[in-house]
Image (cartoon, rainbow, N blue to C red; front, side, top):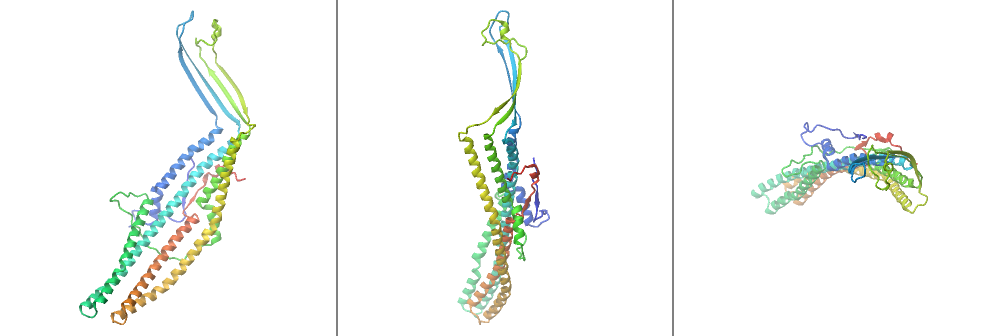
Amino acid sequence: MKRLLFIFLVFGLVSLAAARGLTLDAALARSLEKNPRIQQAKTAVEQAAGQRLAFRSIALPDVALGVLAGVQGGHRAGQASTEPFGFAQGAVRQALFQVAIPASLRRGDIEVLLAAQQLNVAVVEQLHQARTAFYTALYERSLEELGRSQRSRLDANLTSQEARYEAGSVDRGALASAILLARELDPQIEDAHRSYGAAILQLATTMGDDLAPGAALPSPEGALNFRPVNFPLASETSSALDRRADLRLARLLVRAAREDQRISAAAFYPRIDLELFGRYIPATNIQQASSGSAQRTDDLVSSEARAGASYTWRVIDNGKVGGAVLRERSIREMNELQLKKLEASVMRELAGLQDNLRAIAARHDSLTKAVAVAEKNVAVVENSWQQGLASQLEFRTAETGLLATRSGILKAAYQQEMALAEWDRATGRYFQFSDETTANVHSSKQ
């Protein structure tokens, strides 16, 4: 059976023991090893070997062997009342001329390639799912930490307001406003915490981890960092058309449908088979009851062997073969249309992702410039508020603006990571299928 080789193009495997938490590389490695969907696809590759043998059987000889033994009763003069008997016979049929043989051999090889490529598609889908779940967990955890940090600042202001209220410097309304301002972030923090838990659960499911009660859930390690990226659209599109797993699978489906059509159409052509038949009957006193002759010599049974060739040709088709050919041709045409649709969508998809990355970069640049202004504004408003020169509303507005700016920077980094993951999926960068069986498959593209 041909071997399926996967080559890492983007990520490398790292040791889990050396890591303090779950890294992205380790998450991908565990998904590749234990994901149920990937394991199922691997089993399908093994099953395809048996299907290939079924397609190849049309070119192999058909051998039949039968053995019969028994005891014959009855009585004749000069013979025993019972006589054991036995004989063996066999037949061999070998196709000499059969139009469907070349197409069947190619179809069997394609069956293995289809299963292997379906495994590759499953690997890409599950690794992409693990990667997005990993980034989502990092984002939600960072968002929760950011909210808690901001709430700590507000709690410090609340403590100051309580001290001023006890000293009689402010009224009860100012204290209530400070309490309300500090508690406004609680729902956002809880939402981020719940979203983090959902992302962790999704990540553990994709990695095939044990989710029984008491099982330890993964803890992603790392941070979301924004970085400038730039991809040449033309070369990336060309590479995507060549290495994307779903496109390769679609091309194999077109080839398989074309061979199926040829196998069905082969019934229109003549077929010549070589046939060999032999029967061996050992020396025995078996009697031929069907002869009805009283002569002993008429009851002799002997071994025989014969060879010849059979010739068949369907002259008039009642619609069975023609209908099968039309059905297979329609399947091939639908697969070809689907392939063209997928290939045409690659450039549009990559162009949309490139525009999205540029928009995210522009938004991140503007937020990075705005965060310094927001921090300075909060410091000024807080100082004025402590001196009674600014209102509670102004302080709340300044704090909300700062939190929104910091959250926006974090969200921009998260959106870029998600867009880059989608870019790697759209360009086929996760893994590359080593099509080492291509040399053994007779390509039929005409």
